[in-house]
Image 1 (cartoon, rainbow, N blue to C red):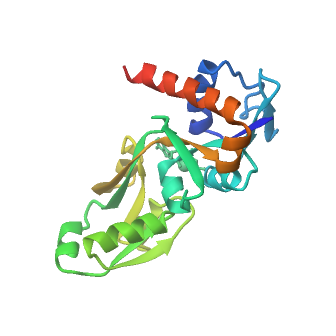
Image 2: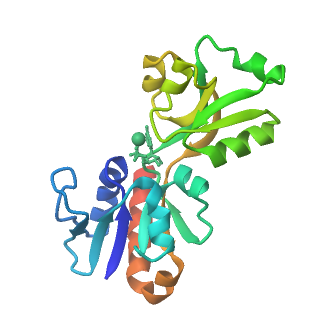
Length: 215
Ligand code: ADP
Ligand code: MG
């Protein structure tokens, strides 16, 4: 049995066409079912639904053999124990610094002020500001980062941006791009040896589908 860990929402939706290219159809729509384990058109392949941030943990520890995780999650979690054979080019966005539109970020940086930064991504943010030599106080949040500068909790946020419409709706502006993000296929190291053939087939089918889409 090959177990694939996916998160509900955009990663699940955007992985479906890749699975189809590998001849795999998922039996149920996770938005309409409460099941956490979904069977597929291939009796020896199943999908488990986990939180996006839990995908590396499942795959690293053998709760799943393969998974799909954002580069943001992989860097923040530290995907060291995972084989990462393929950039799937899905769930594309970027990690950026944003502030209120009336906050002068460039001056604050230039003056060497301490900047209060709210984020779910404390490891990525810490590294980014250390590289720039900017002093920050990091505030760990688990969601709705946009609210932090609006309430005075922070001067800036580090968050994922795609269209920028959420920032705009909250009078925030993107002041710095940190990292381009897309989702990666991740594989458990032991599974790679024990289930070499099915995993190889999945990687090859995904790789072909990704390449076909790029051209
Ligand atoms: P959650 O809210 O549980 O973190 P999301 O579906 O919002 O789940 O995010 C899952 C992954 O999708 C993130 O880790 C990131 O890689 C990617 N992602 C997040 N936001 C966006 C976005 N606006 N556009 C494209 N990809 C995104
Ligand atoms: Mg989200």
